[in-house]
Amino acid sequence: MRRRYPGHTSYGLGKLCAIYGIELENHHRALSDARAAAHLLNLINKKREDGEDAEQAA
Image 1: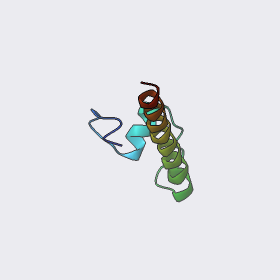
Image 2: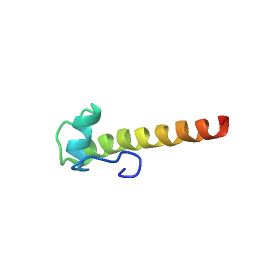
Image 3: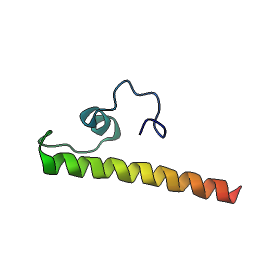
Image 4: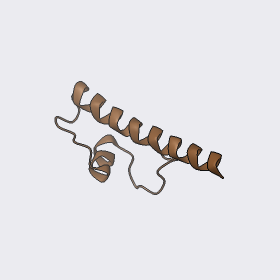
């Protein structure tokens, strides 16, 4: 997360969800935290794929 999204003062799940507009109900409950983490992982993967697409087009 720190490589793809540098500059945050905190990389805690709650802070990142607030920054990126990800719903996090019942923080510290397994299912809620897992769903939020999955959304963050999807953001990371999307950014990685977009970066690879841009490199291949160049």
